[in-house]
Length: 267
Image (cartoon, helix red, strand yellow):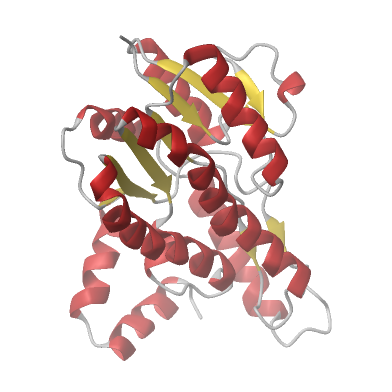
């Protein structure tokens, strides 16, 4: 019997690439979007879901279960970017980012757990970010929200072992997707003490995304995890130096690593 996979944020970017790849491998895929009608040509069904609206989460899970009687894999992929000097980002935008990147995935997990427990089987994959392993300048809120999801995955994983439910996460580096277009950018204010440095850093971040890798790398990684009998706790997918930066953070003195990051961002 083909596995049933639910991908949040499956209408574009990494989610779309993963969905199309998995479907080509014979896996039954459902993606989600806040506005499914905008994607009539999707190669797999798109179900309405907004991770910040719990009622849509329950309705989506129920709809997939009604059609398939099971959900074998949940890929928590929906997320949002945010940039800006932390001092200047409105509180409402910080909270909105955590609602999408942290509380949203938790609520989707909570909604799918009763079904997976009944099945006595399930795999939950949380898409985090290599940025979640370090506090990046002008991406601090994003780093914090993704880092929080990394840590709670570790705790969740231990709590779910008795139910034969496995949880893991995948931290991508920069990939060529439309994430920059949908990201909240704190405006570069003319009278801001951060104006020059933030403006320069913002351009550099956009260049990194534009020159990022093929999202198919993420699709291949996700497929391998789904086919793995005992997945690891953490996976990293991206360019060598992006993944190596996590190792450097473990072994270098804090101030040396901080200096390396500042040099990278030309601060």
